[in-house]
Length: 238
Image 1 (cartoon, helix red, strand yellow):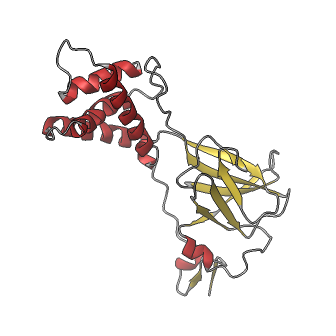
Image 2: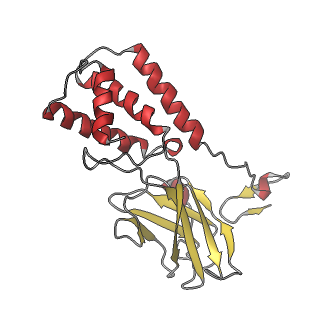
């Protein structure tokens, strides 16, 4: 399906465009911009992205690394979050050993680390999703050249560039695109919500979520699996 066809279908389903009518340039461009804004929202949601990608960098001993366009980790768009991470020994060899890192979920957790400049084998990773480049803080900082640091991020959902382009997304996205854009177009033209369109939009989006769902197995830290206390920073029970 071409982008132009998808936008025309969304306009017709919204009720803004009647049968046999052709959208004008202003209407088409407005719907085109709204569609790209919608894709931008979807790209930040794990279950609306159909693929995760790994990006690896050989460690330099630095305390932090940037990620995004032209960053230390060079990717097209700065990720909103890090889905997983691991550190590798013997990087690129048949004897490569990958050790998962625990993701610290907030700046406050990272701030509680007393010796942030410590260089050693890492156990944790904090991600500051600053803009335009995000910043990765592995801790302890991995030794230079000894380790590779891999982060798992959401693949970028492709924005629409031209009306004549093919939609480069799996088939289950087509109906979700049409009806969810139709919902937004009705709001754009200050038309009342249509329950039928909303129901179709939710159903199509749930199909995408179900197709993309990947739930990791629950793992408990060793120190929490027995009586006693657990230090999340030293990974030790006592």
